[in-house]
Image 1 (tube, rainbow, N blue to C red):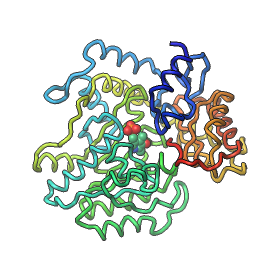
Image 2: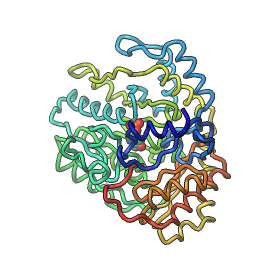
Image 3: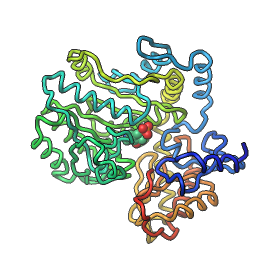
Image 4: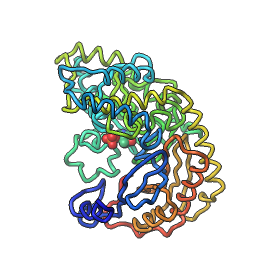
Length: 439
Ligand SMILES: *Cc1c(COP(=O)(O)O)cnc(C)c1O
């Protein structure tokens, strides 16, 4: 198919994420991807400033991941995980255990990040039932959080964020105030008081506490103080409530340490991972439970964990993830992220982006850079700027941000920051008639 035909069929039939079918925002026809680049059907190359929605940590089309997937596809693309196991799942589990905190190598392989969150929520509830507290079926999460797009995950995401439309469809949970203490700044006394107060008031109802540690991504683009996690740890331990860290965006060195919560010195009881897990090649998530949670669920009634999707532990996805983790296991990623962080800071300072009228704040942590703006330019202006600068970015909400592949060089970062600055300098679009775009 030529580019025109691809776009025509797409336009006729296909919904895109957070887009209208009949009046869609511009899309580009991608033909190939390698390293930092996404190549369009007409030969144009775009430098990927957001790593395939934050997943392509080793760059696009990494040859080792691709080869592992090809080898597995030829042997056995899939076998059901009910009643069978296989080498790719076993090898992934063994490898993942090297990365997980001690005592947490009890892994449920999920189809995506959102499903890893659904699984974590079920684990929290089954844990409480097993402990003889069947009344604990609701959850506490944070304002400004994001945990995915399936109903259970939406129900844990910021109640005033992108999912308000579905409030009637979703279970009702509790939300603590968004942490105000900034990462790298002072701890604001009482910042966790809202969480404490809700846990006190609804003692007996709450099964688990969810948050994105340190980095609230898709609903806030905000870095907060690790002391907040220590406070949550104390509150949860005192009540025997599993603390769940959603590391789907932040895990695998994105914010500078292997896990974002490594900054806090405490550990969760349940952890969700995804995105960079499979290196941006194929969908896969995982939920890791502590020994205490796994033991309790296994001793409860039913003495089984009640979840099991058709394509669970897909061998091709497991092979991709094992290859992705092998690349991380070679070491050096933290140093790469530190170099990217310095490059972002220097480049943003040079660009003068922080002085633009439209820019409220600039933030950098690890390989995440954010320009918080008063308002975004129009979709048309954004698409034009992407082609002019040759840098792929996808601003949303009030944020022009970059979450690049971790192979980005200082020169790549300069180009990305130039493009971010160009976007921030464009005239803001009039407020949209409909509530705007996601990620
Ligand atoms: C992306 C994301 C999810 C959802 O993952 P999907 O693979 O898109 O379902 C969940 N939590 C966080 C923190 C995320 O960034």
